[in-house]
Image (cartoon, rainbow, N blue to C red; front, top):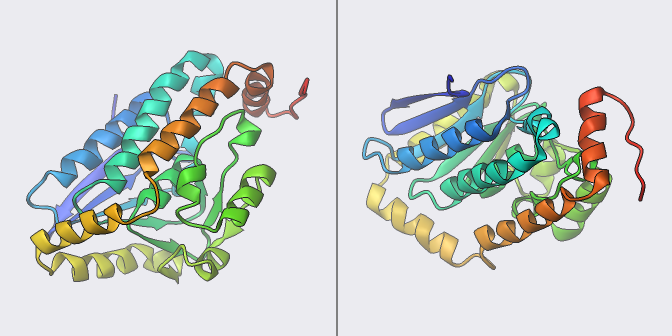
Amino acid sequence: MSRPFKTTISEGIAELVFDHPPVNAFDSAGWAAIAAEIEALGGNDDVNVIIIAAEGRGFCAGVDIKELAADRNLIVKVNKGNYDTFKAVHLNPKPVIVAVHGFVLGGGIGISGAADIVVASECARFGVPEVDRGAMGGGAHLQRLFPVQKVRYMYFTGEMIDAQEAYRLGAIERVVPRDQLRAAAREIAAKIAAKSPAMIRLAKEALNGIEDGNLEDKYRSEQGFTLEAYTTKDSQEARDAFVQKRDAKFDG
């Protein structure tokens, strides 16, 4: 199986680019591969900064719902892949810059929320459709981007917010035209890569240490609720309706 991304390294900057048409939604094996690659880049002495970006219509649509609709037991592997990916970003010894465009959903929120810096194209839109897909998760990372009440509004309604609103709320460092997105990420990465790698590693560890709570523990807690959700008929109905392109009918 081919990897759903490509990686390049130049002048101390690694670029991991999602390339899995049509929407960069990854199955359990894909998430495991992404996590392993990010962790490996963190241990590569030729890498000082990591950029995560994407080709195609949007940054990341999250998990492959069709895989889970076919076999809900795979949620355990998907959960592990998500957890390992977000942890590999957040606890990576190297700064991670995420460059997003188009839709940023589900796992895309997890990666963005775990990152150190986010830049976005003018077309970027952020959302968590978890409730509508019969799942939980993403709240901990969304709350690292946005205020508590905004997170709850987005989570309960499923509504998305655009790049300008995300910038107003302080989640994004820059909003740029789509064709300037990767260049903007590289410009920031180059500034960081020019500094002492040892000092940057210490700085990231120190900044992670002063955050409120433990991001990984919070997300683990959410994943427990995902497993609980997957035992309900409404959760299966939500996934089936999505795959069959129809309105869901819930028992309540």
